Length: 117
Image 1 (cartoon, rainbow, N blue to C red):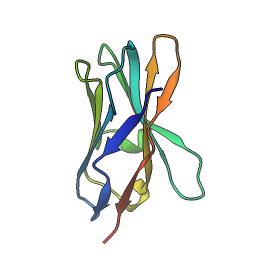
Image 2 (spheres, rainbow, N blue to C red):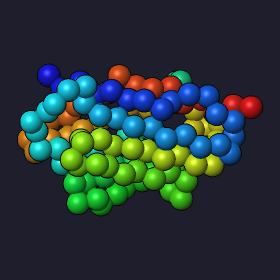
Image 3 (spheres, rainbow, N blue to C red):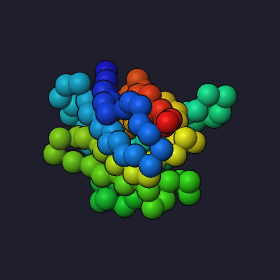
């Protein structure tokens, strides 16, 4: 059972920055192909924020392009989401996910990001 642990969420003012990180709680012996972040705001569906392949190919939601940067450390099986120029509409619970070579998905428990003055 792979358990992913997120950190870095919190309350930030509009225009501020946060960095989220996500890593397994213990050692894993899986080939993780894709890592990424989803978010879910109250009353809305979960949406993909960003993803990154093992070769560092990235994909972003249009709403975060130019403001968010996803990166990963393959040796540590860790994924990061640098969020700049945050807006109130970025407020949501952010979930990390890993996909392994068998296309199985693993999820974190979620971390709250609140952008408010």
